[in-house]
Image (cartoon, rainbow, N blue to C red; front, side, top):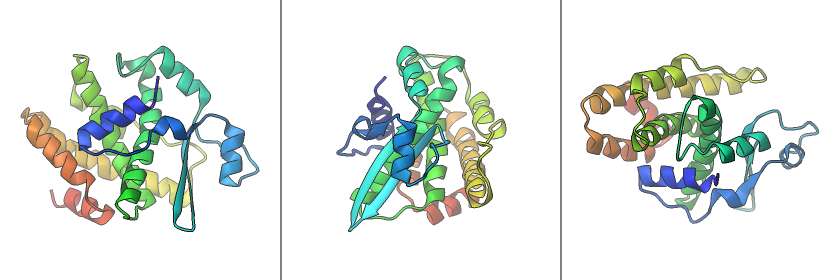
Length: 216
């Protein structure tokens, strides 16, 4: 499966366009990822966006575990998303979300925080899962997806300190926001209004996103 299909899915949802294809930045070698990170250890994460900025130039690579890529090639979630490929899909989607959001912000010459990246990725996973299931006419309902993403979620054991705090807060804010989306739009089948809300939210800064969530 080409990760560009996931990029196009998000670009369609948010009505944006990045002039780069994520597949051109994909690496699956953990030793190469560690070298790019400047670490002596093999990259412990199954997915990681590698970022370096030098002399005003942004350099990106997306590391994704080779076995995840292989499994998604055999069980393509774009054509059939189900329990067996859901976790791999979410990991890949998170990486593509980071790549797209950071790249889009860079084109606008806007900064982005790590918390903002994670918060948007959590929202992207929720709405992308719903979008694919709707296209495939599958019967998972938003409540079940919300519970899977935000109530039964776990965090990698190597996360600690500020990184763990960031992931937990991103998940908490996104969970609250996606519940609001369900209550106001999905349950009432206001799909046009839902898309307008998502596109508005995508263009907010981190602080504006958090204020928007907490005010509703």
